[in-house]
Image (cartoon, rainbow, N blue to C red; front, side, top):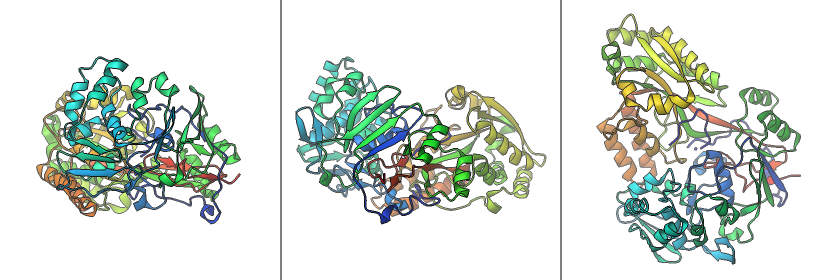
Amino acid sequence: MTHRTSAKMALAGLTLALMSSAGSFAQEAQTGGTLRVLGTAEVDRFDTVPPATADTGSFFRATTRQLINFAASTDPDEQIAPQADLADSVPVPTDEGLTYTFKLRQGANWDAPDGPRQIVAGDVERGFMRLCNPSLPAPAVSYFEDLIVGFADFCAGFADVEPTVEAMKAYIEAGDVAGIETPSDDTVVFRLKYAANDFIYLLTLPVTTPAPVEVLDYLPDSPEYRENYISNGPYTIEAYVPDTQITLVRNPAWQAESDPLRKAYVDRIEVIAGVQPDAAMQQLQSGDGDMLYDINVPPVTVQMLSMQGDDKISTLAEGSSRMIWINTVSENNDGALRNPLVRQALNYAVNKAAIVQQLGGPEFATPLNGIFPLGILGHHDFAPYPTNNSEGDIAKAKELLAEAGYPDGLSLKMPFRNAGNGAAEAQVLQASLEAAGFKIELVPTPASDFYPRLITNFDNALNGVWDLVPSGWSPDWPGGAARSIFQPQYTYDGTHGTFNFSDYNNEAANEVAARALATSDLAEAAKLWNEVDEIVMADPPTVPLISQTTVLYHGIAVQNFLPYAAGGNGDWTNVWLSR
């Protein structure tokens, strides 16, 4: 789970706003050439286990494979539909949703030191065991500890292991996870503690990548690990110059017939670091560069390119959102924010259309009325507090404030993250809220203090240090990720100081969410998450603002530019070059 003002990760997400590589499908795909990817920073992780930036998903797409993944596509439904990758099919769970049995695809190989070697079930189990390594823990390990039988016990035991390569290797090789069974080299069986239809989506995460036995000889993502990198994707590492460039070439062990998701048209991929955004855009437009790595296209550039009719722009909705949290636990204004009429007034007051414009226009954001944004199974188009063109309804907000007993309005403190768009966003919010009768005191807060010291410190909420706070959220995986939005933010398990800033909890919503997770019918799950959204927004603990969108751009030679959900970019492994 991540907080960020601009993100890279997808349901009706990954939609093309303008046109995407017009004419690319009319030409025959060409094999060969070097794809040049430009970024300000380098690829930050080679190992799939430790935390990595979302941009690294493109690197992992090229060099690793998982049991389940996503297809690169311009179709919004296909973009987030789980597809078989290393598995030969997407299994239907048995035992009332508690058991998943995978058969591995033959011909899927490691580029091992002694030559190509088939990926086997033990590699899958070993990959999961590495997640528990306390020397560099995986951020997603808690999901699997919660879900897989015996996994939490295995991880707990790992905490007592001496942090040496030898001791950690011995623990993994001698270990066993009760809920991961490998009855044969081509069969993996997962046994869950409870039915969870998003388990298939969790298996798309790079952290679930199988691990060859050789990696146990190195610390996770250590220099030695990088020097002895073993790929199971269509590309592997030829050269790496820190902070400068990483070069990928074809993996000789990869077999195209074993991989239904990656065509691997280009021969080489060069990821070049240290390129400033303006220079990168110039290189893409001149044909000297092909794709962007960690660079966001500036709004002014998008507007200019759109006016010119440039067909190399596309947009990607990744499940990221912005909202205002409402402090319902403090005694400020005699606890006025605990009154649902006041919270409803806040929802009516905000001019969401102005936030969209402040971010650069509809290519960059869409007004949001619920807790699940575009790109998430469970998002639906509803408006519990409707306003004309999402511009706010000042009269309705004032009416509700008066009905709540505050005809003269309320004075509220609103800290904001003093970085990026934080100040501009806060000023737009202040203007619309004050027009409705609220008096807003803006409190600029350093980015380094905003989440860790101010907002997640529950004492600050209890003591009324803040009344309203603009915040952002991105899910941990694309598509069926409603759980990773709802549970961290909108459920309370007795632990203060989490990303549920005011300890919000609604038992009715929790019960429906449990049913949404348990059903094996994803269409039914979507309807149930819709119901969760409506229950929460009837309270409401937040003011949803916008679904965020990333604008993508590519060079003139790039053809078949298809968005990839887990990479937040076009798919390196499916583009081809016309030069």
